[in-house]
Length: 296
Image 1 (cartoon, rainbow, N blue to C red):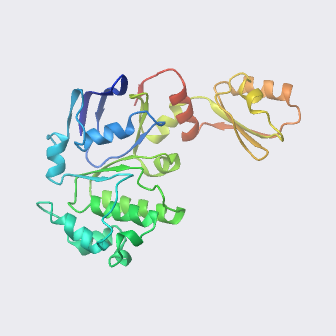
Image 2 (image 1 turned 180 degrees about the horizontal axis):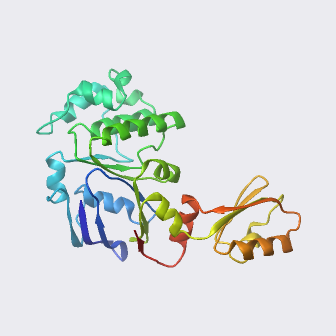
Image 3 (image 1 turned 120 degrees about the vertical axis):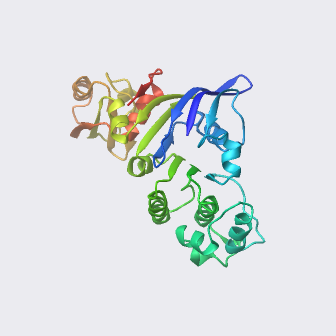
């Protein structure tokens, strides 16, 4: 998959601003970024649902619309309804008939782990079950590239784990997966590579460990009852502040300066720990700071 100089605007808003991206067969890539970063626009262009204003996209040598019509690209989108009159099995058989080549319905049910839902009508499914059915529909043509937009939305923890187990098994045959998610822990665990967007541009691209390192700094954690977020946020070196009960977490660009200032203003702070930045901290640092493009 190859994107070169891809641009897309909506009115005066530049949703995608000159993206260059290559994804090799067999990679599992997480597309991350805050709301409005351009993730959904990129996915729409990859699926041929909208065309770029500039640059070009090629998927296995074809433009996206051709690659999709040939069944080489499957998609699982966050939104979109399912026909309420059909059972899950009937829906899979119907969609399968639209492709030149498709997997047998029983194999699709097995791969998506929804055989127990085969006879159930789609209007009787929970939100998480509907997501699993959308995954089944996406793999019907046995695509080489699978594009997922918030695939585990509405799923509980157990369903999310089962979904990613199925996804890993499906991708193990050398297929390519590109997924957008707000669950950073999923990207941390399941992605081989992370592409991080900010304001329509790529600000980081590399393995999860590399992206964590690009965030720089360290994270200071402590116990501090009745913490004042504004005051803590103004301490030297503090990038952001989060509070959970009496626990405070502060990603820092200069943890030495932060801990000195913290103890000066809050001598009652205790259980102080300083550790390397995780993916959450890197995400905040890279998407909140002035644009810095870093690639592995």
